[in-house]
Length: 204
Ligand SMILES: [Zn+2]
Image: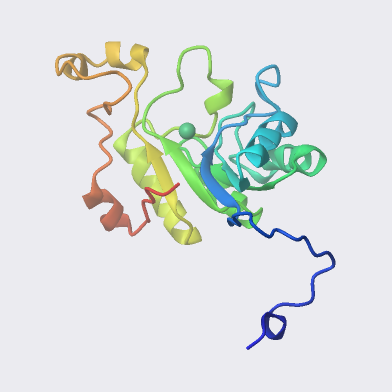
């Protein structure tokens, strides 16, 4: 079978003789953050660096000002992609206990999955984490129930901040790094994922 039997004819031919041809990569964990933190990065600079590294698709995670926990907070970020990005961009929605009612709505707006943080917003960064945190087991269960209804995967981040570690003596007592421990009152147990039937995706 000729390739032309499967694919439509190309508009443009490039002679890559002697060169190695690789498919574009996908980076599933990116924080460009724009319009939050525009002094650090925008979709122009972030996706230019992405393309230079051979990656043609990124999945943008929900830390911004505000994060995309609803269609209304997703819309300006999608608009920014349309104006600035030079690679394909998909979004994870924010799933948090304070905006349960938005979880299904943001799926309808087109997110590819969700992320939730198992700790409170770091001090001074409350706006960046609005609608993104599951701070108790009850909130986490409610979030997972709503995510399950959408059929989309969810990533949970159990990392703690120094300040939350200090608030949690039992964590501090383990001598673990504040970047690698989870608050004891919100444990990301596999049992809970199975209970609600929501899907924990380590790939995102
Ligand atoms: Zn991240």
